[in-house]
Image 1: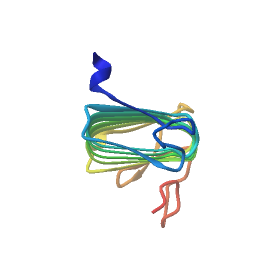
Image 2 (image 1 turned 45 degrees about the horizontal axis):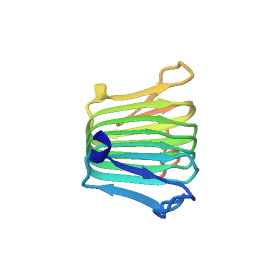
Image 3 (image 1 turned 90 degrees about the vertical axis):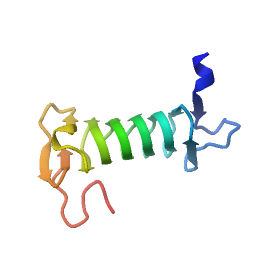
Image 4 (image 1 turned 120 degrees about the vertical axis):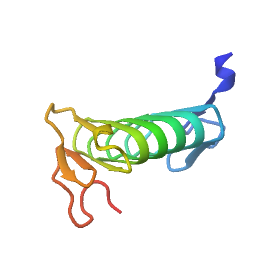
Length: 160
């Protein structure tokens, strides 16, 4: 019965839905969305849902907005954007960027070097945890990094 309330989206070359790496998989106005995208280059997108969860390979470009909870686990070089949500939980591989804007809680676990940018998030609720066990570097202005230098002038892992 619970499965009837969920939207399940599978990203992959074999799917009949045409949701393949490099092609946005969009879920909107549903109770929840669960993405399973083990390939590199998946683009899961959620908006206006209660929850959105994604398990992605590398180069994942995850976007979640207007939701209660957004969560993602992805490989290296991921881009994660959560805005206008209650909670964003991310576990990202090396070389990843996580952006949290206008939410109550942003909790990021970095498997390697990563950059976390929080805007309009209470400072005590913008959390980055580094796999190395080291504390993240607080670069100011809501920017935390693990295993990398503080960005300056547009460099860093969150370009643009």
